[in-house]
Length: 409
Image 1 (cartoon, rainbow, N blue to C red):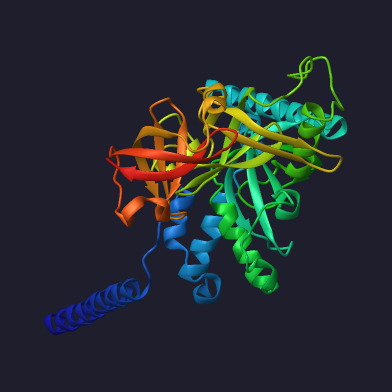
Image 2 (image 1 turned 180 degrees about the vertical axis):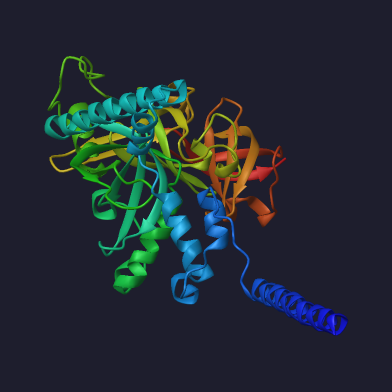
């Protein structure tokens, strides 16, 4: 009985142990299942860059900019480079680099130069000083219905409308009066563009200074200048021919201008057979056969706008309203020789060239006098060529040349 009792006790003891073991195994399985179901912990990023990689906005599509808009924003940010940014950067960082200091010094010098230039322009406007500049471009007007000449002076553009640029006597062609207003503007534009590169005189008529608020050059100032060439030309004529507005430092104050004088002429425009020059405030044309001591077949091969010529005054007429001036590039004084020429006398000469526009042969006589012979005045109607030897029968004697009938020999 005792053995049976011990066996029963052992069975009773084993059953709780097995139940405990089973229960422990089930709890371990449940813990593993729960552990597998729980999400893994994410280490918090220490830097903002890492945080930006982990955290994604809830509504990312609405917050993200389109690619084109983002590029526009970046370009606008790059354009906002003003003069104040280096100073802001310097103050915030506390770094005084040599580049920033040099940039500040350059900006200070530029502002001082700009202020001085603006003051000079205002003074020139008050005193009516005559200035000289180069015609860099000729454009149709946007606000003003006409043509605008842009003159470069001391790195400043001076704008002159065509009504204040062209001389009233300038010829725009035989059909100009019959043209429409648009055609007249186009004709003036074409004539003006032939004068690009010319060095012209002008007076300051208006000066403005405006501050640029937006864009790449924000914070900088823009100086706008308007001028008049016609008033400057009138002042030069008053000084040289009417003896008005003369000052102690005015060139030519102590002498009178007379025929035969040597003067300086500035080339304004060049055509094939003639050149427009400005001399002593007067615009005048020089024909190709009077441009130089030697023959010139094409004037554009000899001079260009902006060049300076030494000329001899051939004719001079002065009245109350205007001055007529004729000059020649032939500096050899042939007036005495011309006075020795006699009508109906024969002289030997050499053909220089043929002016196709006027059908005139340019001939240099043995005595050094220039002769002009029309093509129909060549005996036999035969063509003449450069360096041909001819005999000229003089029919008239002019101030600085003769005309006649030519015969090839």
